[in-house]
Image 1 (cartoon, rainbow, N blue to C red):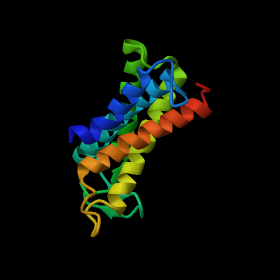
Image 2: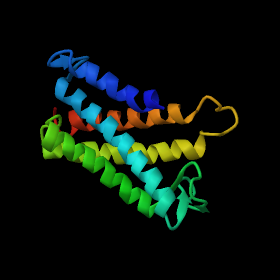
Image 3: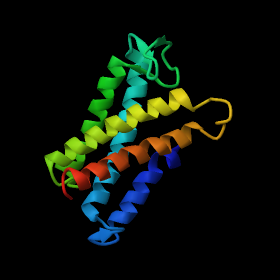
Image 4: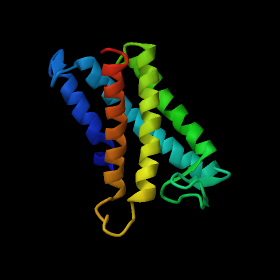
Length: 164
């Protein structure tokens, strides 16, 4: 599962070290994507683990009907709040301690991207994972899409909202 969780981050980090610009994007945008991919994975882990352990009521993201904890695509208030906290913790660490995110606005973008990626991952889990004809949609593949979506959201917002 390491490849599914880390591959997007590796790609973004590799792009960031190619110089001040790679494929038309600045190295800071690639770093934001890198941070967001890791923040997305942490947000997803926080959501899953806290939601399974402490979620009082879990709902299927597609219908908002109650489902048992641990159901693919299930969300809970506790897990959702934990998701935001997880994404924020990694993003603020990348800003304040490591210096990979240059601004607090970037922290907000990475946190938002992590939350968005996690919610879309729940949607993928509810609609595709463990469904007939989607045997290839393993947890590792879902984790790759999760981090890819988080990074893509951050890169898009970095370019179009933050003007990076």
